[in-house]
Picture 1: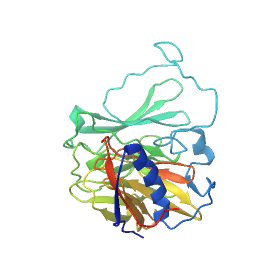
Picture 2: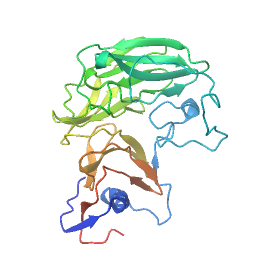
Picture 3: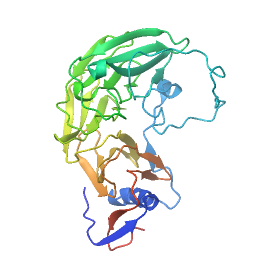
Length: 310
């Protein structure tokens, strides 16, 4: 469902845009919440064994939040340092953790060679490194790198997005299980968004000048299950899965729009404007709302309907 907001124009500072965008999201999706109901909307969090580790971008909660505990919050060259290991490659991705494995991606030889690597969490020694799809490097910004997407795992397979080199699945011994092409990517600054595991699907979106898309792939085979074309030409964000009442939605925050999709079919459920041109931040969920942020400007413009939202 899409809605045309074409009646009034309001100029807002960025903080106001964040708040109003969050409110608009669920007004557009046609869902009514009780005034203090903070349970109707929530991130699809990891449960079971995965909740014990850090198996994806922003952890089991999907929001970089962990349960209360006694965590170290101070480091020096020696304080709270158990071990230190040098890395030979370059990458902007975050490491993930499962059991005694720390897994990350890296690029070498100016991005011509891309690797998935695994280290022992207990002592930092290298378990294995696997090269995936060597070839000509993608064009990337100096602040970006050849390996910027954070991998993810379900404890059985490891999944990584390598930009134009495609998606790859490996087992915990470093063997490639499948490698899937995603097509040519023409994105200024290079790719960066991390893939999302949702049930038996690996979901990724990529906005670029060659034709953006959001797509889901079978985790067992790498076969594409669905692919929906997108109009945005730039964007480096990561999708999230949320539970809204009795169903789940896939949220993509990118150039100009925030959009919701059916995570299984790829059908668009709704969209609203309010974003700016270049969007990197991952959406977060709280207080029954989804909050989305975009780039740094002094103000932007948001179109509102004539009727009240409340």
